[in-house]
Length: 152
Image (cartoon, rainbow, N blue to C red; front, side, top):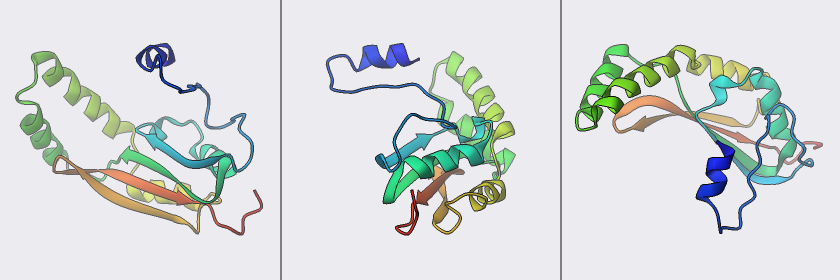
């Protein structure tokens, strides 16, 4: 996947790296902003990953994680899929519902996300907000801010 991204960005001044959020080679307080979309539920040890984000994030800066969550009515999801995919080609109409259903099976509930964040250095400086995507309230924005008084 990184090779495809490099091809797509050829000619641009971008440095792409592939890594593991549990252990990075970045210095403490390296990033002004960290953004992550659709993979938090795939982390083997989310608490460890969040601690690494805390370490590499500059003081008074934030990380944003955008994730699907399980706190959604299955009938609402089914209706949303049918409504939003009806004009798509057959392959997308078949594959997308399977993908979304699988994501929902392995995603976290909002209370699970909160419990994970509460066990990290972000416990006093986070916000969890439900988001709507094309009318479906099944997504979450997790804003994690690093306090000024932190040592790292």
